[in-house]
Image (cartoon, rainbow, N blue to C red; front, side, top):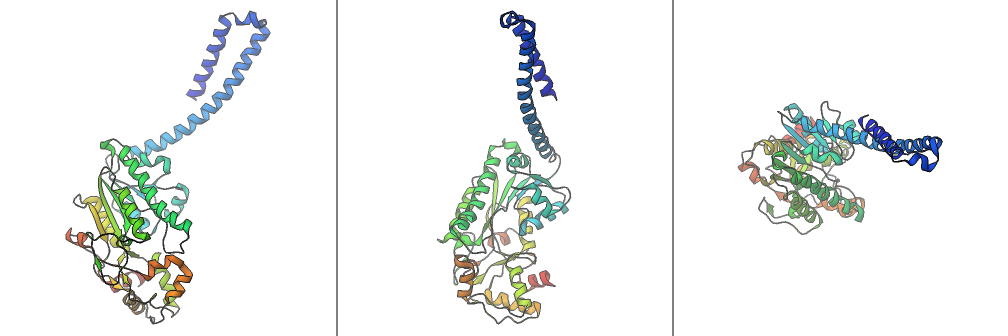
Length: 372
């Protein structure tokens, strides 16, 4: 309303000024003066309406951003991308339980709110990410397009873009803030695909990168994150086990129909981790400033695909001898079959040396927890 009133006053001053300089006699007397005033008022009312609308939008955005900024005062605040995903949804629950204020960085706040349905969360669209990151204790970047599907050229581009570009946006927001407003730590997802695949090699955090497509994606993803002007933790995550999604959710229905068995040869390594341990490692990384650099988020006892299927069959009291041949998976997933037909043996050396205690080191214990 202030903008509208101010603009109206400006109109009166302009009309009075023109009249005071003798415009009225030149253009035709009192009737023309009234016409002139009406014209001025009509034009400026239109401009005033547009400016008022812009002012309202800016005021509402400013109000939202000021709420985000003020909510972190005196408390612990974490900003999260990928909050509706398999890891992110459980992480948000844990953060709220432990008293953190959570800001969900998302492309679609309405959709994210309907999926999470947790009281007290704050939602920020991309134009608000910088304000949402300001003053936060930590930023956790989990965003990324799913990879266990048929790959097309377009999807491969999106797999990379959704990880690298979102990470660059987050890092740019962090680096553009005054030092006192930056988060203490950026915890950025990556994947064990960084190492490439092998049936015989064992990889740890000091191992070199592979040379396939997923290794390339992971390198660019991590490089973007490491440019943040704060402590950075990279979690190279293995295959996450959870009942609600991921590899396990696809396997359970098949085993339930007595049709379960290893995918491909069954000899490929399966570096897994229980979802609660991924969340546990993230929580450690938030609170422990000694956590910095790359950590493998995998259980200490990786298994081969055949061993995983045997354990799953035992836990579900179902047979596990019906293999899914390579050609069937390649027909279904194309190049994306690489995700399940090839693997790597990855060990979490840094997490263990840093004192993290895994809740689930044995795959059978993890499956029992998730399925019983």
